[in-house]
Length: 337
Image (cartoon, rainbow, N blue to C red):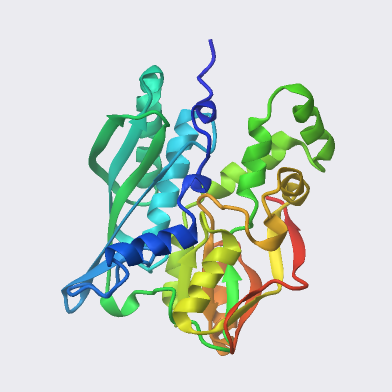
């Protein structure tokens, strides 16, 4: 008997299970958590929270967990770990990584707990981190992730609010994980036939490439941006590229023009079938890349830093005077791995 289909046990999958941006902002405002907090360098509303420990050291803390985006338990754990650690890496904190696992499973799936935890552990150890414990509960929908800590010098930390007009925007992973994984979940019936007829590449190939991107940690990309004086950074996850760019634009009081959308080859057609909005930057990404704003005169240095670490990068847009995010005329650039 094969492994259980984890994705069958949840109605929403991966980062698409998260509360929408507008609802989240309303929740934070209602509870007063959108205000500055004493004792923190930055906190609620950013990718992670940072607290100064000494003049030379800051502690960065974050937590992230979600429902299965893939059926294999071990791969689910790896994706969940990379996604959780990404929030710390987006701030530039790449050292002293430790994780407390978060796991919730229905009763009929408890036998896969060890595989999921092994996936989390292997991924964290692959990032030179350590799993220090965690918490496991019974839950109707499967959930996995981690609470993550890392350290960095306070002056090396980044947030989403420093973008300046004239900055160039780079993305360190292609988009399209939601339609890629969505296509894999359609296994039987007439709709499965339609998915395969719509796909321009083998669905399994597209899914394998998406998994490879989702299990690629953003640590090397974060080390690269530490070498260059960039303006701002965030990681692209549940809000999609347009949503994360909007956060960056609002926090900095600027406008952002998205000019190019690098996508996993084969995902635009699948997104159109499912209605995920990939061509508009709206498709939810799971364990996506870093979105980095850098002054134009340092863009070449950043590209060299990425290339030296074998990090994928793509120039996706420009920061402008004004407000909001524009994708008018953005071109689609297929990416194969």
